[in-house]
Length: 62
Image (cartoon, rainbow, N blue to C red; front, side, top):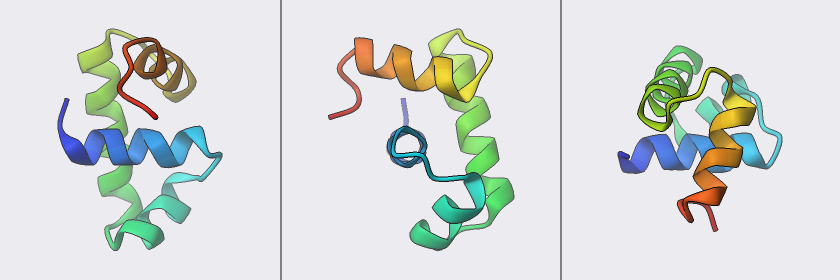
């Protein structure tokens, strides 16, 4: 997984929307959504929530 994908998942885990995450990271909402989509693909899941849970299981989120 790429660092930006993990960052976006970390903010999603904390309940932040793609818009909020974009503002925090200084990137667009669409870019955040793309990072989250790619994270879902890498983790083999369909939703952002599933991605957060799977990343936690794999020890990618602290």
